[in-house]
Each structure stands twice: as structure tokens, then as C-alpha cells.
Length: 440
Image (cartoon, rainbow, N blue to C red):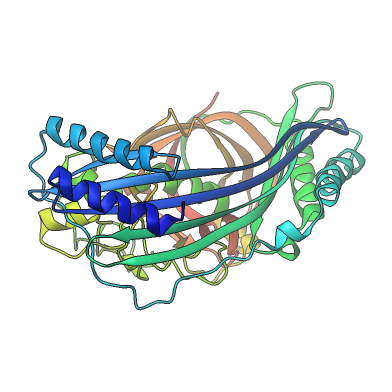
């Protein structure tokens, strides 16, 4: 059954059930990934999946239901499940269905990675492993060497006449390895993302992961204290996304964000600008509307240190009497693409500017060591000690702790070393004036 035909069937059933309005979101997801270890395929994924979500509204209250099949039985199941959920919900928050069509034309993603044969993709994964093992004899094991790509296509229909479709996706290569000098083994990890195979350089991935692991051999602990810290671009991105939920209006409304009461206030240094741009050319994923059909827009949510907006769904926007921001993805209200504009100093210049301090290249415990409700974090880390404005030795087994909002207030310098460090972050490294470090 076609998507539109299925949606129309659901609309008829939903009206009979007494719903005022409803929306059907259909998503097709196609994924390929091959992971190699010791020259053999360890994991192979070549699969497609479908998900259908119904949002139904009655008396300005919404309920949801999901299925994976487009047929009459599933249509009835969706409506009946949504009604059952509606009957037991106790929320008084008002919701609605969106009617305005996006001004931006929908994006169409052509998965060029599909033009590569399966053999070519397996060979690329094997090439990374071979490059890593030949880099240095101290690299003992490439735990994972992977190459893959994915494409999603969505259709959105609602009873207010909105009909939208769009596709998006990306490809990636990653490698995770271990080096050893006979003492403590050290890990190396690198990933690269792109819209086209030419943007995913497997040799660079292998080289960077290998060199980082080797450079960490012989690492020592550091003395506890307060340090000036250079957070490498990927590490700062990881820290941001660990706390990205605090920018959700729903979290703020429920008292689950330290940003409650801080809208239009200065929460970061004046030099910090964070932009959410769903159309950003250099990042692979682009969207013209979110999963509620709301148009996406480019916005500076931190503008010269000032918090200018939260990320709003239709429901949270109605509660605050503002417009939704087009940020509902995967049933959560989150930024799609985040850009930190570049500063003036190169990566080497940032190291020199630190003088005496630490360079952090990896965090551990990002799922357990962060508390978004308070903004507090305590994370295991490794990196390098900086002295005299240069890297002097690798360091490990230390813990960095603080508050994310304090970090935003303590950013001294922003680098010019912008790179794509995840599928949805483009930005440089930053220097934080002071962080608590627990070591030896």
C-alpha cells in the first residue's frame, strides 16, 4: 500500500474514532555497514526498515501510536492504540497539528555510496585496518575498522492538508585500535562523515587513529588541581551533545534544565556563538521540516553569549505562547546541525596560548558522568600536558569535573581549526580558563 493511501485510510478511521485532527509520519531507513577485524568480516549489516507514527489530537490533547506495516489491519491498530493512549493520558498541555508548508524546498539525498559495490566497501574497511597495522609495529590490534552509509526517506501527511516528503543520509568510516609498548595499552579512535565517498578519506582516518594511539604510549597521571584546558574540537562537541537536552523547552518547562529562567540572559562568554543550521552546506544531513511538519530555520541559539531561544515542539510552544522552532526529530526536540563559528587562532596557536595546562583529546563516561538537570559533569579523560606553550608528554587517568554552563562562561579562546567531527557538528577547539582536575 502506498504511503498516501495508507494515511487517508487512517484519517477516515481516526475521524470515526472521534479525533479532531491527526498526522501520519512514514519513515523508510536503509543502512549498510561492514566491520572488519583481523582481515575478516566481524559484522555485516545490509537492511531496510519502516516506521509509521500516528499523532492524533482530540480536545487539544495528543496521543501517539506506531507500527511498521502499511495495511488495513495496521491502520486500525494505529487508531485504536492512539485512542487507548489518549484515554489514559493525564496531561493538560495543549497540542496541535501543523498546517503551514515550508518555504524551503524539500531536500533529496542521493546515496552515492550505493554506487560502490559491496566488495569495494569491504576493501575500504580492510584498507583502513592494513594502514593502521603498517603504521607502527606497536599497533597490536585493530578492534574495529568499519565503513558504512545510510539513507532515510520520510513522508508526512495530516488532516490540515499538509503533504511533505524528504530524504537525507550520509556515509562514514571509523577505526578503533589499540597500541602497546609492552606496558599500558593505548587506544586510538577516529571517524569521518560525508555526503559523498570522496569526502570520507579512509587513509586519513587510519593515520589519525594510529598516530594518536602511538602518541599516548607512556602516558602518566597528572597532579590534582585547577588547570587551563584545551578541549579539542571533537571533545567539545561531545560535551555539548551530552548536555544538548538542556536547550529543549520541554525540559525547561518540567524543571529538568539549569537554563530555566535564563532566556535572553547572558549564559556564555561574549565571543561564543552557537548556531543551529538545518541547511548547513558542509554537514551531510539537511532538513526543510521536522517530524511535526514544522519548517526548520537557521538560528543563533547562543548569540554573543546570550541565550536567544529554546528548541520548541508544537506542544511546548503553545505552552510558552511562542512559535515552534522545527526541532522535533526522533520524537525529541533537539538541534539538528550545530555550528560553532571559527575564531582566529590555529590549533597550534591554541596550544601555545595555553602556556601551562592540559589538552584533552578523549572523555570517558559521557553517558554516566553527566547530569543535565544540574549541568554538572565528572568525566575520565586523557590527553597531553602542555608546558611552555607546547605539548611535552601524554597524560591519562585523570578526571575533569565542573559545570557545563561554567565552561561556557570560561571559554577564553576559540580556534580556527573547524572540522566535521560528527554527522551534525562543525566547529573548532576551545580553551577553557580553568577546570578542576583530579589525578595523582
